[in-house]
Image 1 (cartoon, helix red, strand yellow):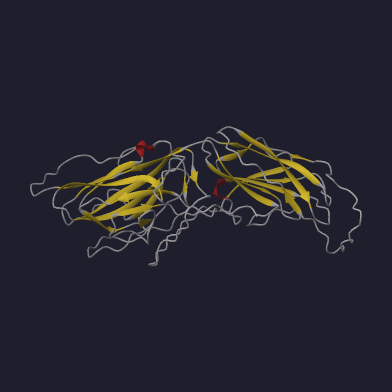
Image 2 (cartoon, one colour):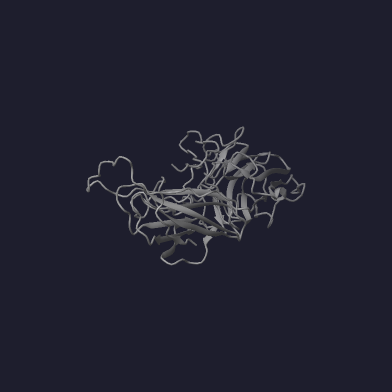
Length: 400
């Protein structure tokens, strides 16, 4: 990890005209740190770069605390003397290190930021630096003394769609589940864009969505087009905290009313993004699509047969006549990985009564108030009748 190597005084000279001496009560340090270069390390590769801490103030800085924080796809190398290591909220690795040299006004010292990319590293962020006076950095915000570096590990993550199959008669209400799964090897937490991983859900023809998860919005021309509500042919669903662990599944339960007379009707689920753009980190498009299939028997009780499409571990279940084979109701859930549940209750039905349990809100990241990796890419779904607020593919807040 981070080795703190004291450097000599850099470029301290005597000016031709002495500046007025600062009043003792006004003198204080003003520390700034140099910017780290970006990189694309491979899993298992170590990043090791120097950082210069310079005192632009009028008083010496002593007992300077240098802090480094790493998202979960990165980890520190061997512990360094003078550093205390902890894991804070959302599995963020933190090192608090004491620099062993007083930094006089105009002087600089050099330290190193060192970490290794893990096998699940992908879209990562590093925070590093100190407070302006040498105390630990403020709980939020970045400036010239405390900086943020976004980097991408040379890795992939495989988003897979999982469909569902049900059997119902005309006029029935039936529940189907559409699922988005991360098969890894990288975890996904994109904090540099609001084009987050999403699941496109096309409602089978001959059915109508009467209850919809709150995390699913109608899809317009090129993105979400309004609040969650029944009656639309296509939806896009996404997780509010925009995080998908390796092995994690996000499931979204829809209640459909069957309007077709008989036969098999199919819809589709597709692993994509909220703007229906295939993520660059997903190099395996073969499992991006799966089917939502409803078998509607004729008067003799027979159907056209067939199987529903699925990916990875296959379809998520079979339902019929409004039964709930998964023990859930309209809404979303997440499983696997290290995350909690994602959830949402649907919109109102159209005249038919379907009892659904209202799930709780999404599990938050539990982020520290310093909002490590609080990217600017949040997609906000407004459910009070207003349109979804979307700021298309914004960049994250740059270091000031």
